[in-house]
Length: 635
Image (cartoon, rainbow, N blue to C red; front, side, top):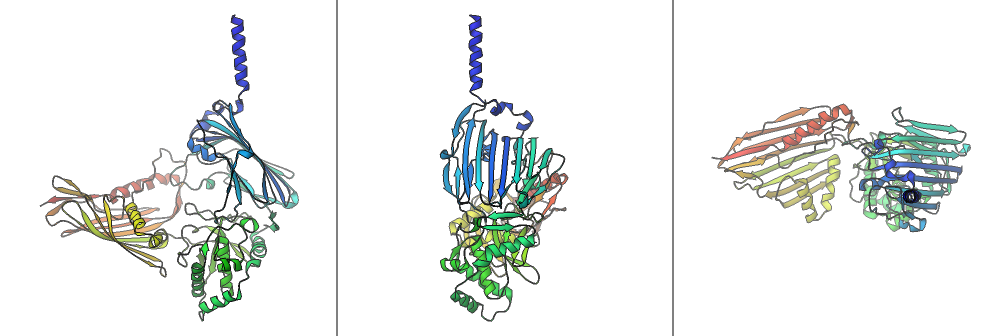
């Protein structure tokens, strides 16, 4: 009997083990890779075969164990395709924490959707995606895909690190190519800290890395891919749909770009050429002519998503934009360029990585197709003027934080050139607040606030002009959320687009702003110019920190106190100065008035991790000083 029981349990264990994949059990992940990890890449294996200038195949297998909902974003559940990119294989299999298979999804189970945002230069037409919601954590997903494409201009980059809070158990990449295509690669941030194996054998290049711990994201960290190893690839001789291209150097690449993508788009109706010449009239100044043309484009066209042309790179014909009155970033930029050309003003179609939260550069050391947006460069004797042609309201010459301070590729007929766009430092991004309010003996305040914004402060504020009253009020309440019960009684806005100055004047009131305690009024003096941002504290800072943009905020606030009250206690002023911030606040009394003067200058830059705690304490002190209170007592 004892023998039969042992056999029964042995068979049970055997059958249980047969129904699972031991490789995919979440319990087999090494403990050191679980630390700080929302997900662990168990295996990432990408094989790229470039058999000709017009043929590339990508085979991928990715195994990821996900520990919580934050790790879901690391799943590879979407594949793009179009007429030149075919998804020949796509499937995903889900395993539970023990490695037992739960469900397999075939290509037919993936949903289809359109992909069109009108911003990206390269943007596929369609996508297959898996609508997946896990029932428990942890789980493991295995995705496999095979892609065939005739576009060899876009070779995926490789990094052993998939993102913040993601560990990597093993990752491989191999590229096999025809030697005459001249594969190029650019390695960034490689160091001995991470063991990466590289192999070059004949016409095959491969990279392998193992056991890489998750990196925690810290406040004010630089972009992840400015910190971790990454390799970029491209072909010197590539194919982009119906066009063969070359990327030997930026000059040759720019010439190819201009001749193959832009030169045949320049035709305009004779009537439009005549009209724009009439608008320009006798004006000879190229900048003034450009202002006239820019306003003409803003009034005539609107921005829409258009996905036509060479891989999403070729703009609509200028005559079609003229006829239809709309276009995407490529179309509207090119249309403006062509109009300027017809009135004798040179301007250049410019490729950029756009984005307000990050300043991503065109890699000047690696000639390849890059970028996700297009703007227009207008050369002058002093500097380039950058025009965002997709906006109907942006003032001439205001670049804004979407494309500021980064390397871009300027396309000229004679070739390409890497140029840096405008940097708005603390001298140009300014805000001055002039406020006055009266404190009533019941704790209510009534007053006026005037704000003058320039530079990137202007860029962040000027959209208020076109908002409805209700939306404006909500924004002011959010801006001054330190004032409880705030009521916006009147709003007056003046947008000077010539000097690029935004003037806001509001009348405000707020009940119970002051706390009443035993006949005393206690309240924060600086009601309308507070900055209470304090970076997170770390026991041990791992990364350098970055202040992405500088600014200069100044204010003067006049407070009238009730006639039957006197000042019992008021805060002391303070002045701080360092390489990254200057701050001064002072509080002065003149009869029945208090004057609060404040200046905060934050400087853009990349600073060593050893300075992080110094900066954090500065911001802590600033937040505390900005919230300093006064105590009034009844006479």
